[in-house]
Length: 128
Image 1 (spheres, rainbow, N blue to C red):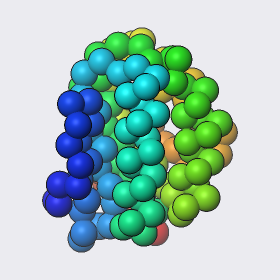
Image 2: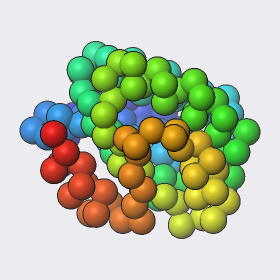
Image 3: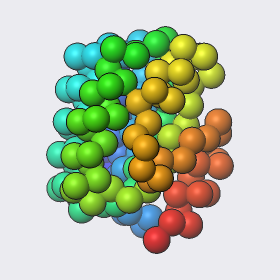
């Protein structure tokens, strides 16, 4: 794994063997931190020309519903426009974070949700 970006709320790595971005979200999130970090992810997706993202919310510690609409209606369409085809989303054990994530999911079928890193990674690697 190659480390690409580190903020206090998000660490982004790249797996050159399987060609995906790993986005590890950390702690409490708010609309500003999610929008700023989302643009970094979009930029790295374009730079690396990847179509797969492993989005790990397992360490997110609360709700972030104020950013859910932006995520679903602005960010995901931009990600898809720039090549995103498969998005494995590991939900937080925090129920409020999970509800925010479900609200943020786009209606397209590119996102699949998981409760474990192992299951999410196994699915993502199999996607072509």
